[in-house]
Structure formats: C-alpha cells, structure tokens
Length: 329
Figure 1 (cartoon, rainbow, N blue to C red):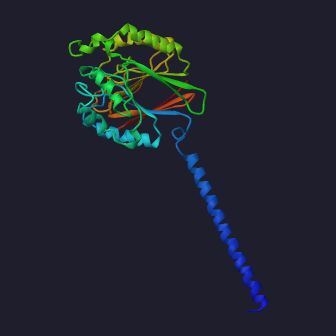
Figure 2 (cartoon, helix red, strand yellow; figure 1 turned 180 degrees about the vertical axis):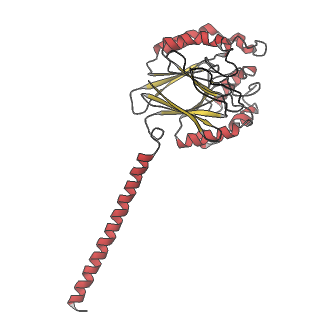
C-alpha cells in the first residue's frame, strides 16, 4: 500500500470515529430531552416532593363485599402512583358489630387480607364509628401494638406533619363524635356512657388554641353537613363542634357515616368532606347551594397538601376520577 492510500485510509477511519462520536452525542442529548419532557409533561401536582399525600376512606369493613376489594385495589394504585404517606379512616371500620379482640377474624377478613397492596403498608390513622362502638374500642386501640400500620392508640388524638420544602406544617386532629350523637342507643353502644365529653371538648379547645400549624384538619365519623340519608340527624353533633371549627378556623373536616362521597361548603370558614363509600353505598342528592359535589359511588378520596394549597380528588372503585377541587389556605 503506497503512502497516498495510507493517507486515504486514515482519513476514512477518522471520519468513522467522528461519525460514531456524533451519534453517541445525539443519542445522549435525545435521552436528556426525553427525561426533561417527562418531567414537564408529568402530573402537574401529584409528582412533586413538596407535599403531604394521603388517602381518605370510611365505612369499609365488610369482608371485602360491596366492592370493598375493588376500592382497596384502586387505593393501592393511587398510593403507588402518587407516593401516599398515610391513610385516614373515617370510622365504622368493622361491620356490623366492630371487633371483640385483637385476634378477631375481622382483622384479617376486612383489613389485612383486603388492603394488600405494598403501597398501603403505610400508617393508618382511624377514628371510630357507631358500628365500632358495638364491639370493643379497646381492641382496636390495642391492635396498634400488634400491627405496624394500624396507628390508632386513643379515642381522640392529634399529630403534626411538616410540609416538605417549606416552613409550614399541618395538624391532624381526630375526634370521637359518637358520644355527642343523641340518636345512638346507649344499650347497643354501652361504652358510650363511659366517655367524658367535657374532657374531650377541653382537649379539643386546647389543641386548636395551642397549635402553630397553618393547616388545621379535623377527622371525625359524623358529618356536620350532609345531603345524604342522615341529613336531619346530624344537628346534635353540628351544634357541638361547629363553634370550635369557626373560632379556630379549621380548614377541612373529613367525616364518614354517610355511605357516599360529598363536598359541602356552607357559610363560614371550613370545608366539609364526606368519604364514607369504602364498601356499601346509599343515595345522596345535590339539592342545595352548599353542596359542591355528591356521588353515590363506591370510592375514596386522595389528597395532596402543599404549603399554600390542598388538592383533593374523589375516585370510584374503577379508578374513575369523579371530582377534583383545590382549597387555598
């Protein structure tokens, strides 16, 4: 091979190397662009690391029946997709008569064997409903010593969470509304007679007055406002707790008891949500101006709490988004 041919070969090899390098560079740039595109076109709110994310479900413990398993499956998908931190349970955790011990079969049939998604192995914070009071409330409290995810240790309690990447925090306050429901029979709910309602209200006043949290969220079983089948039976509970909520500017109250999904916004500061459709459902109407949303569908709610805004959506047992709203602090 003469010198001229050698020179030509070297030029060709050099061109091939340059071409290969350019291909690698283009591929790398394309990959970076794709990643950036995914970040830009992802869910605007639910993928950010600046929020507390939680699910709200109530009136669910029916051995998997009435679409309880389907709701549980969709909760698992939502928890996986949106990095849910914990679950709030609105009470009536076990039908029809609560549980009698920490080894009651209901723990497996209505809870452990139903909410099986890995993403639901997160803290569950519960309040108690009237059906829970037909069994042993103490058994549900004691189960927190056995279960890693069942975190309910008192009949009424609170905890605070810092909102990531901000100086703000939220307080979650769980109340026991059952002793204030005059329609409940003391014979079938004998444990109600032992409850010191004065002590609970003093605790609630002190908790709300002392907190420095910018978001105040209260959880209880009975709704204060509803267009469900119990619309005329919640006055006893409302007259007790409404003054506390307005005085201390509670942002949101979550409840169950009504087997449906609702958003009520009467006059005043607080937004009222019902998420009691974890299994059996009942009729509900939207027949007044304060009712922003009402649906008689099996489902739950998913919430993202940022420093300035609360985003909420209601989903049914098929994963369909029924309603979305946002509340600005």
